[in-house]
Image 1 (cartoon, rainbow, N blue to C red):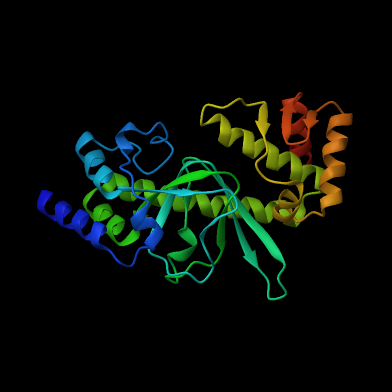
Image 2 (cartoon, rainbow, N blue to C red; image 1 turned 120 degrees about the vertical axis):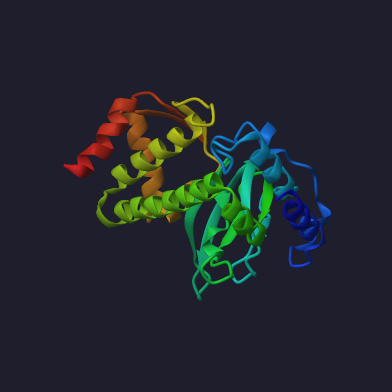
Length: 259
């Protein structure tokens, strides 16, 4: 297995199918030393398996705020694990209108959209200066066949994306504006809490307009709903700084949609 792994790593470093910027901006990244490893692919892997994965995930790419990690239509060659920062994924209509399809934070994977067609179906844009770990997909497939835990974790991540898509469909299909925004904020704080951040205070990396695009709401509706939550003393809102004053009340807003 060691010989095969060495061959894989050599091929990665010589792989001309990877974007040029990804081959130039290379820094060693150790999955075994990453504080996000329990949220990413290496969950439950042995020391030997982690070492092998360390060799696979050998590139780190810096993506500045506003820069595009990949465009819709780009060839799919790799998955990207967000190491630091925040991203949004968007699809564009023929007339130029953009629809936000998701927000990704540290410890989450970007690029799963390209697996089925070998081309990306959306743009991934950094909402702040970010770093991603590149995982060449062909080599990930090879290692997944050798390490069942890695394969299992990858399947869990893909399943989580499907569940998230179902949640978005529920948001757009049956919830009122207040319920959509409450569910969005609760989901965001839960994900941030899993990364060691406060469960009640957050700084929004996205604009009100981007939130509206994701939730299927107009900008005015998003702003008005934030103001209502503040008037009801559920939130304290200072531009992008949000503090949840009454978590139970915010949850109750969401629960009312399920009654």
